[in-house]
Image 1: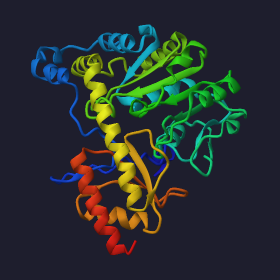
Image 2: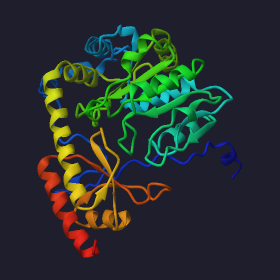
Image 3: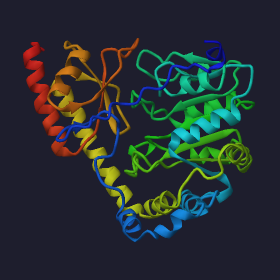
Amino acid sequence: MSWENNIRRVVPYTPGEQPKQQNIIKLNTNENPYPPAPGVREVLTQFDTDLLRKYPDPNAQVLVDAIAENYGVNPKQVFVGVGSDDVLSMAFMTFFNSDKPVLFPDVTYSFYDVWADVYRITYKQIPLTEDFRIDPDDYRQENGGIIFPNPNAPTGVLESLELIEEILKANPDSIVIVDEAYIDFGGQSALPLLEKYENLLVVQTFSKSRSMAGIRIGFAIGSEKLIGYMNDVKFSVNSYTMNHLTIQCGAQAIRDDAYFREMTGRIIATRENAKKRLTALGFTFPDSMSNFIFASHRSADAGRIFEALKSRGIFVRYWNKPRISNSLRITIGTDAEMEQLYAALTEILAKEGA
């Protein structure tokens, strides 16, 4: 039909499976296995429902101020959105408008090329090294912007601040976005580099380390100039992106630093134990500094392991894509969930003769 000629067609992002059945072990979407901070429950039980008939603060100032205080920046340096996906999407729309290609790794968060396609942004995927690392020399070329996660997803590899600064120094005329969705599980944030580089934007999320994937809070921290440009675009699209309840829950969550450190520490400890247990089972993987491990078995096929785990009610993530078709991304669950995973893998690998 002729009207279809004007439809914008893109291949959408495919999120991790969200199974509906009960009594499963869900290790496929990097959710935190522990509940949010206690203050979040208090907000939920005491929330004034009369607020629902009123528009929320378009600036989400209570949340912005809490984030700014926690990270030691000016509130004018903070942008908030409905999950980091919303924040990143807004950043793509705001900053990546050159005729030159935006650069990002070939093995990375698979939403980047989707946003580039939907916003008609030219892009170039830069191959990671054989050991899934970024070579900063690859980013010494003309570009319309740069984005990469640190730690990377799905590999879990953490790059140093020195490498990030090398990329920033080589690209003073480009916006460089560091996507830090997993930085709280053992990495050093690029936030200190904001003092030297006005073209740096750091994006984080409440979904992983703060156990709030279901409420959708993401934020960016950058120079006042960058954040001002993002807000101009946001308020030209939708001024009321965050609701009253989300704003209050987010502010309470970020104020409870002791609980945050306890929960991330627990996940880090389980991850380090998982590295030993998976190695003993014959898996190899990059040294993850996230809340997941990107594992390949030395002899068993990843696709077959994935299906065998799924049949046992254990969900992990698998992509049948070049370079990563024999790898599984395994989210770090509770210690009890991980023990069930190890038991299932032991049984599956024995049947595979691995």
